[in-house]
Length: 389
Image (cartoon, rainbow, N blue to C red):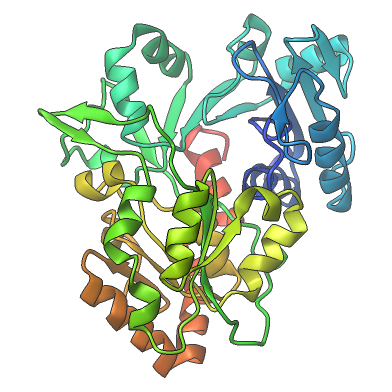
């Protein structure tokens, strides 16, 4: 067995304790733990955003809800107490005391910074190897190009990974800013998503409806971050598929949009309510017939290769995925269990294929998850690329 490592997984969960976010952090924590390594989850609010309480539906200084949610969730997987949270608003460290935390970080072999949310305090830079994962490709590369602080932040790490799997090839207009990006797929602890025997009922997805302020300019073109505009051309989809059930499970959807899409046959749900409980989020995915979703124009138009960690969970649950083409067909098998579309005709073809042979496509989805998203493989790759394996 390889040497047992001390690993810090730095991320964002207490500040936004919703299903998809907590599961993303858990896959890193639990994945490394089951590989035999010692892990600690670290979160630092800095001063940029109050923690969110989804039950009350508001942002507040009080992080009690998020801390309790994370501890309950981690405890179930044998990770009780394996977290520390610094609240910049309260000037208080929760979970671990300062001396113990600083000692662990200084002794850590790997400081893995997911999404670059926490501030790079001096004590956080004392680990042997520091790596960062860009989970928002294109947007982040443009920000690094245009902002000196962000560029310095990323370059303070020894290794930079990106979910924009095609970007390191240098074949798009996306600037790389002299960073040696390593491509990465989102890891999933597969046996936590054991497929159900049922075929499922609805084509579903979960996400944010209308995120503004993150559009980017490249080569004289503007590329959108918003998903809402992508659904307008396919608003009539449910009526075009006899017997098909299609969910829109989004947060931030206006009442008018919700009513309008419901009138066209979509089942509209509130992702904020669904995702309050990470177990409900998981079962929603496992109970689905397949995922049908769109992608942000930034990734679609520039073919970044981005692939959603949520979609990876659908595959792990043996649920086929139909998603907009971001160029992931260069490294993932498509056409069986996983479908990339650019036209409405391709959406219909994918649905028809799944409906004709559901068991075949469920098996293919699980096979793709095992071959490409297994946490042991992806986290092992991280350790290899950082020189720790």
